[in-house]
Length: 308
Image 1 (cartoon, rainbow, N blue to C red):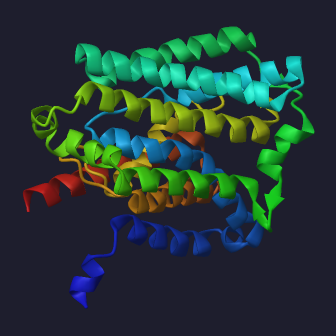
Image 2 (image 1 turned 180 degrees about the horizontal axis):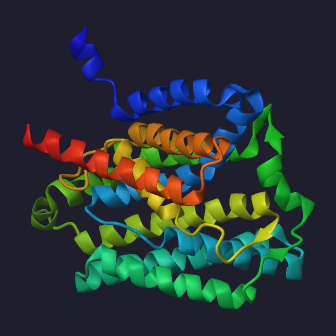
């Protein structure tokens, strides 16, 4: 029995404890409307946390995701409103996101620069561009068709949930059933073996960060639809929630070990934590501190496991 309990992911335990605690402290927590809200809010975070998992598996990090997402919401809203085309707006946002992802990957791979430093730089650049493009304010007035991506449903299931499920399925297929996925694990666990086999480490890293960019572009579609426009600071700090979700989900920051299932549980745990704190009227500073504590605890557990 104890052995079986030991196999339960830590994120599952945290999620269960949070649900029990909030159901007592905040009676509205278990309402259908609130649980639906938790799931919907988690979809955007999941779209960032899934590629962040792959990036961390390669012993990397992407601090630019939140700022990139904010910039992409502005680009999408401006282009969609001016052209009247959702497709054109999304294409523009996706191109920007891919460009940022490619820049991160190229600088890290080609010049062997620390991912922390590179993505911190692109974070600042993306944030500055977002503020300039939006002139410091929210660009409102996107079309009803665009809002459907957040408010609509298919076969009784909300559109964001469909998108999150499809992205999870695609990345799961890539990570566990393709050579690309094997290379991702090798980049974190045995990078020398890749080079010895004649496989380009630099190209593999580039594709991992570009995958992150693609997911940021998809997340921009949901966030723009949710806020009914583009906001230059809409997703600032969301990258830290994504890192927290990956850490809570059990992905090691070294050794190339982790799972997408753990990341999904981590996303739900972080989402439930923030939702519950909102219901308890806790200020944003407390929420940020709580996420920070969770990350430190997850890293401590990871370090303890690596020594055992």
